[in-house]
Amino acid sequence: MRILLTGGSGMVGRNILADPRAEAHEIFAPARAELDLTDAAACRRFVAELAPDLVIHCAGVVGGIQANIDGGGRFLSENLAIGLSVVGAAHAARVPRLINLASSCVFPAGAQIPLREDRLLTGSLEPTNEGYALAKLATWKLVQAFGREIRGSTWRTLIPPNLYGRFDHFDSRRSHMMAAAILKIDEALRAGRNRVQIWGDGAARREFLCAADLADFIWRYCGRLDQLPETLNVGVGEDRTVDDYYRALATAMGYRGAFIHDRARPVGVMRKVLDVSGQQRLGWSPPTPLADGLAVAVAWFREARGL
Image 1 (tube, rainbow, N blue to C red):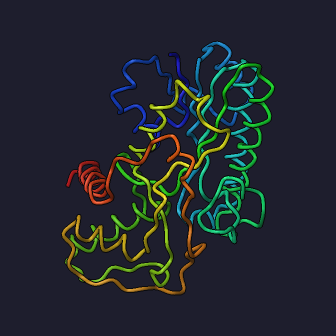
Image 2 (tube, one colour):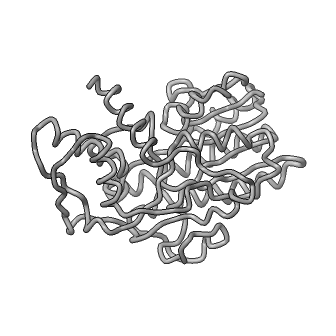
Image 3 (cartoon, rainbow, N blue to C red):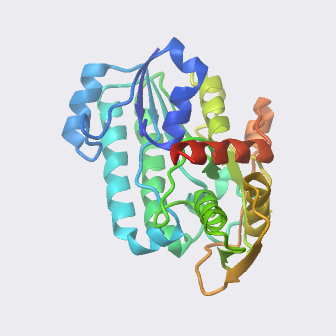
């Protein structure tokens, strides 16, 4: 199968490429220097010439809560431009199969837990990541509308929760919670400090899926997308407190110090966990236990930093 993968240098993209099943396919994952995904005309030319059997759309401008607050306009405008360019190009080329990755932040801030797919667009979004969520929602609706116009096509949107694992990016200003926590604990270990700061009171609850498990789901179903609904949550279906994740990382990293809380920092919604009954009906569940996934994430961090 000839596959166009956007976001091939990101965490999800690299996990897709690292999966052994990738070797059976002809995968094109252009870097930004090869293809600017915000350039609609360039995307149309590239996809028309490539004529892929499948597009896996993982690309996007991403970042943690503070990055979203500080750069909401960029998160909205660039992700919207990317979605319009990639999905529009796939529609113009009549690509028969497409997988679009959204995010659990697309659900309304006050939606009933667990978050079911039919609760999308039923309420206001969480203000701290509204720009990113709006762009992802627009791309989701575009996938639905354009996909239905191509006879015989199967275009699907997957909604994962927070992700972690191998190939994550570690940046104190832009990282998501798990990568930021690894950075903080590592800095404390190397400096000999016995305190690590957690934003908020640590009681907010989150669901984390190992990125390799999301790649596993994509490879299992990319050749039989007709078995999936148009929109599907893909996750663990269980959440833990922020404190729980920090404690689990402390165990994985050998940190024995204390944690302190900065309650003045933003935390977003207090609870976010997906309803995964759809994936359960398919017979799939994430194969990686949290402790194993954290060990992989920590090992990757240390390898990437030469530690």
